[in-house]
View 1 (cartoon, each protein chain N blue to C red):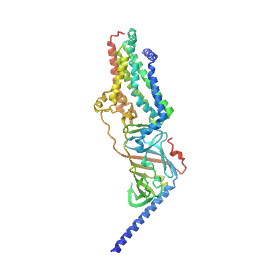
View 2 (cartoon, chains in turn red, orange):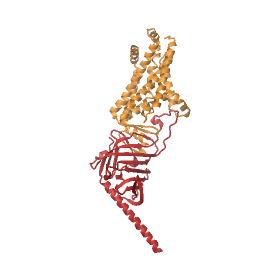
View 3 (tube, rainbow over the protein chains, first blue to last red):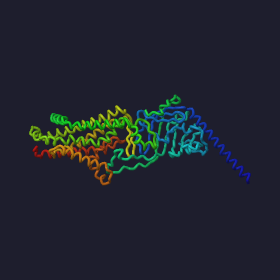
View 4 (cartoon, rainbow over the protein chains, first blue to last red):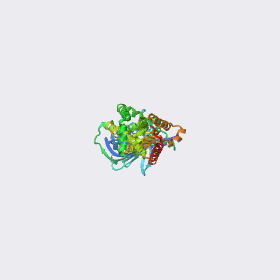
Length: 231
Length: 279
């Protein structure tokens, strides 16, 4: 009986280890694919869907440079990017190898079967508590990710791929996140209650940012000043 | 008629008090621009505090369009006082100087005389607003440049594309023109009753101050009154900075203001026609 129990534990241990090794290999391959991109400049359209922000859909330029510099700029305009999602790019999710990989089965994302992999950060000071990746094994790309942080709650990204799939770069990213309350005193904003019907209070604390990329310029070099200046 | 209007405009612009309004507007606009140029970043930091809790803001928020919006918000509440200064003097000033009786002995109808005076007040109002528009919009654009307009409201942030802003300012200034002519019409009406210009000027100012206070106080009892106060509708120039613009509400307010103008001017005509001019 003891022998049988020992065998079961051993089989379970080797199976789990084997699975995890397989997932680790998968993450490594995805990372290797993303690592081919040192920098990129992309053009796209950004749509913000947040209860307290009323902004038009706009043309934006997106800049990325290794290891995790990221900027969204609107030509002569204003762009808002969720703080939690300064890493709206995938490249910064797998920026280092300081995590433990746990296999979590598989799931279907938009009709595509994806391996579910959980990354547990090893660093004590990391803001990220848990990252869940849904990896398309065939294309070696991340279809969806969910990142739970200490400060900014959980945010999710869903990616659609097209002509830049070879670089692991998506054609469309939908970023969902939690927002904090927005309120300014009416005395500062010079707003007066007009009387009549009351405006409804905005309560939805979930936000969505959608970037649809139209073009990428990859590995052509980007000046660091792009990430520090507003113009 | 045009000749009469020209004479009225000549008389208006001959008085030094006419230029007080222009000087006051220039001073306020210049001070706001100077303050924003020197310390605008700190001000923006304060205004954006709440947004920056969740978002990283990229781009130049402190641009000419934003400065103009800030100036309009602070200044348009006070401009009526400057309008009353001239419109309240139109009839009472003549009575005070003893020239009103002389004027109506001329071969000009009372209606014609009044109309020319009211139109002269309206032209003065439009000139004052154009001067304000030039300083607050075009000079601000020259100093701070153009860009998207970010409006921080108490519960909402509205971002307007830079290409979608200029027409809104023209429309807002047009609406402000109707608002200010309403004030001119009120001061003009009060001017009929007095023999001295101080009375109508102070009365018009008092009505506007009381109504503005009622408009700005967020007390349920006053909220019931607000739809009936013309000062409440005067603030609807801001409607052009909504996305999308609620044309129904803006046009309704514009209509109510025009109705006020018609009522005030008609009353002025009626009273002046019946009035026994003794001075």
